[in-house]
Length: 233
Image (cartoon, rainbow, N blue to C red; front, side, top):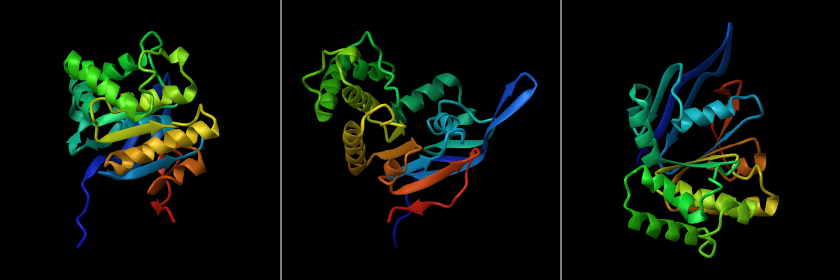
């Protein structure tokens, strides 16, 4: 009998309601999602479907108005911001569409930054940052700042940064959105490579071609998963 995989991130009937004066905006309306360890899941949805809010919930960047979010079995809605930041920093690595690199820092310094908040020694930070940048084929660009790198190179720095604390989960939000098709394929190559090493990949996208790289596609419509899970092939 095949052993059931353990959930790493689980959302149970999550609602997120923003109050704007007298107006209430329901960004998520009963979102439920169960991501198992080592899965590659794509969350696909059009503009206005609630993808940005879903990213915040899946990435434990925000807490729900109602419902539960379990990160490795722990209910994050019961945590204070300090504890949440620590557990998020250890377990989730983020790759964003706009790279979100700090322009005044070098590639190596950008990759080292998440390790500072986890108390990693300076020597270990430098060693790991060099290893990660070499892994994404940027070993010769460690002293370059973002303005000195192409879009694809910046996104590879972002991938290296997402791995700084060796998280179990990589959350990629439209990771190729600002890249040309050739460079986008290279970024997807690295994400798939990470999945093969055992990382859990959650990718949020509106792109059918990108979504097809995942083992499972979840369709987000009007703030909730509308269709049953679909497997590739």
